[in-house]
Length: 102
Image (cartoon, one colour):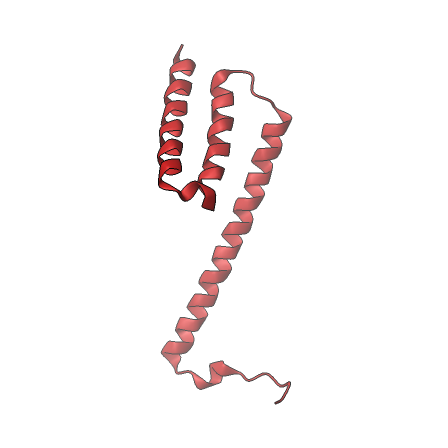
């Protein structure tokens, strides 16, 4: 066994090398977009903490945000919970729109 790394790219043909480069670029782009998403979520959450809701539509928007975060977790993937989340999101959107119109 040796500590010298083997350059596997030198053993690939041109199309396989291009596919590898494309996958690496796609992975890098994905990681960059995930990092940007986490940054914008932190900024939004800081804003939500700094400015508490003053109206029901604002409180509903905050609840929607938290519910959507929960909906992305493993615990929320159970069918009954998915249906409940979907129904609650619809109710919050409807009530917030109705309250904002009045």
